[in-house]
Image 1 (cartoon, rainbow over the protein chains, first blue to last red):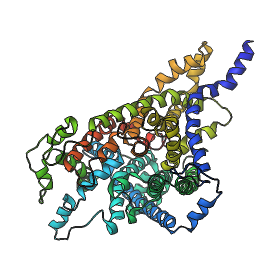
Image 2: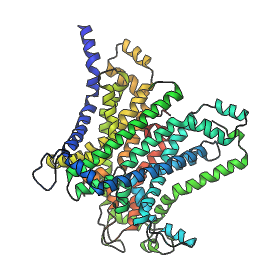
Image 3: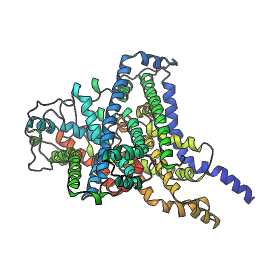
Image 4: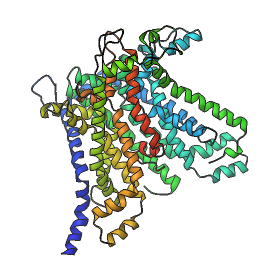
Length: 295
Length: 288
């Protein structure tokens, strides 16, 4: 009896423990499944009937110039933010990796932007980038004409700047953790060999930091591809800042084309999924090479 | 990598200056907005920015107690309500996630069972899903179930933020403690519940607390769920702060004051979790 009880426990206990979380998960998964189903219909919030139309929404998307445009802006945004944030974050991390006076304060200041609600950060910058705001005042001091920061031609770059302000700290603290975990011996032998600083960086730091760099890029890519808050709070999605999740928002909640909007979201979701799988497999390989531990 | 001993004072100064430069970039917007929140309307719209001014609490009074501000009609936004909404939704969401997620993370760390990796990966995939994809069906469901614009509805949807975080990070903390202690306790006749509550939980307490705080911060900072699934009764303060922009005008001073109040809770909490931050931000991938 006791024996049977044991076996029962061993087999079902984990499921039992996990049940509450699983119930919540199923509650969350259900809408995900609905999202896929609705994307195959002509669901409009304002019309009482909906029909199964197969892959029409997807085919329409591929023929829709606006969809390709949004996708292109989104990819451009993601590329720009990552190209700026990762190297800049690495630079900041390397600076922070010195035991100098006040380093603790610097490390804390660094995480302040990161803890802020992105939408509020965007509002702060909107106040700063206002037509007669402080940024244009500073620019005026050096004799330049005021810049319409959040108007059409400049807006995407201005929002990239806000993104850089908000998320470079993210890259920096992960890469700093990476730097601090590196073994010291290679650096000591490089010192003995009088290797140049560039050589040390190129041949020691970068390769050893690779898993951390991949992880940073992974997280930044995922979040950039679905950026919404910064756009909504600044331009509300003007033409030049119409990222895919913003356009899907308007498609659904202004034009009530739920099916069409969802098909766009599922396409970007697939993109995110593929990119993340590739990066995760690179990361696993880099980790194996770095630690010799299989994960 | 403590190489400071080899650093010449001159190089130290250079590093210090570079960091100070970055700190100015990181802090300037915040400082400017804090200053703005204490300015009168005239000082805010002054063509030459004022760095020295007579501070006034006008903006804070206006958003907290309502009443006439100099320039505009009495407060259109009910900021105090939004702040309260944020507290209710965020705290409840974290508590619910802890109750459901901590035992789950323990099971994922300790037991081998079928679909284990699939279940764990499902939790993680929520972190990367585009929000609108899940909000649209939830929006339609909530209209039918009368959960639209309710605390319960929002607390449930916030699980998308808090649950993956708690399950993945706390799982790592459980994996870090050695199995031997627990096995010894089991031999002493403890049930799994006894082992879990008396041995495992106390050992992960610091990690648990910091993860809960991080989950609170991320939930607090969320905007899109409240924007779409809430309405003026349930908007969190991130959505409420945006309400100071209308078609006719922007209430800069009041918006600055609302901004300062909204960022206070996450900034104050951040002080306590610095040590655990890297681990939290990478969903436990880096065990700092």
